[in-house]
Length: 330
Ligand SMILES: Cc1ncc(COP(=O)(O)O)c(C=O)c1O
Image (cartoon, rainbow, N blue to C red; front, side):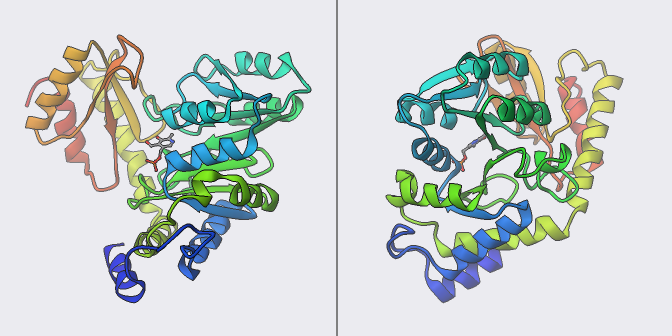
């Protein structure tokens, strides 16, 4: 990944020089868009400079003031901010509650509704039943948008995140977005959809049109990262193994009450108060383990936690050390 960035910088320079619609779009950007579309199984992909800007851009291009923007209560801040700039009415439902979401969809059948949810939730590591969500969206005339920043690259047989783990495709999820800042290890973001959808984003998204395109070395590095995601499935298999070991360790050492087990690489340890989360995080840091203490406003009051994020560079011994540190036995 580093070499790919280095080679591209030598060949193209660093900065992209302008917005994608002016001078910033190169053959390397196009290659990554094509490769991502092929990887995700969507007709077309467009790149944005970050996931935050992608989310603002999608909402702003698709929503008018009279529309409704339906969201899970725990959606990422970028999706909440996206609602603010559209002027559309934001309607939130309790976390993962498909029934409450469906009630909102039914409330006004004729109104255009964009329904956004994360694929894997960033702070809880859990997921909607997106098959049911897609069915409701289809029945009640809403457009389903899944932001899978935390799934793509790290979950599923092929690394396509919730699309793989729930056997979904463009038919169920017409808009799929994500960042390159997490599993890909680079920066930037993508939105996948139909030809029409992507053309609309290119023409209407202000965060696309009026923003300098990604630097070419970043795009080249991302192409290499995508190749690794596609050719090294052992990384995802290893994460699944580590998740299993982590759960086993928690059960063995009496941590099951604090651990909020998930099927993703994100495993929250619920510590309630800010003081408890900060203290544990500092202790783990001394043990050589980086786990940020997550506190309000990122999570609700009294739901402070450590967010354990497992990755393929870790070994089973690291999980042993983690468990011992969590029980204060380092
Ligand atoms: C669910 C979700 N969406 C969007 C973003 C923003 O992505 P980026 O960091 O590329 O701006 C994040 C980043 O944390 C995220 O977790």
